[in-house]
Amino acid sequence: MAVFIVVSSVIASAADGFSDADKAFVAKVSQGGMYEVALGKLAESKATTQDIRDSGNTEAHDHLLVGDELKSIVVANGMEFPTALNDQFQSRLDAIGALPSDQFDAAYIRDMKKIHKADGAAFAQEAVSGTNPDLKAFAAETYRIVQRHLGELGASVHP
Image 1 (tube, rainbow, N blue to C red):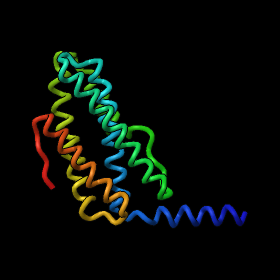
Image 2 (tube, rainbow, N blue to C red):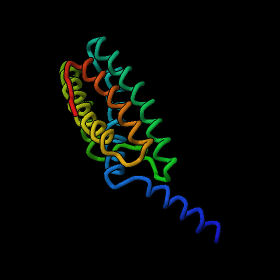
Image 3 (cartoon, one colour):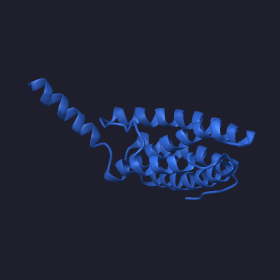
């Protein structure tokens, strides 16, 4: 019993390494990243143009790597990392997946721009005002990746 109390208090104090804003950032970008992976994988099979299929492959690959890095930071700080899309993002994925192939590519580009802009703003904010040094450094580095993806999508985001 004493071991359980010690382990619990260590985990609780590690999770305290994240401010409420840090926790909200993790919740937002982990969902956004998982969504981009799922949408990228969908694009690999559903897109009508090779550029979109290739983009989907790049998105899925990059965001899997970013997600793994975020997960390691989150777990090291004693928090659980989400493993599934929430209802909001699952609904978005289902709606785009249900589109006919001739409408998919345009919807994919629109939604990728939208999610990259939202997540890019979150990464920029966390890079400036995050309280956990590892999470703050991760956000700064990942912001550069998001900017590159937005450039590939023909959009831009600024902090």
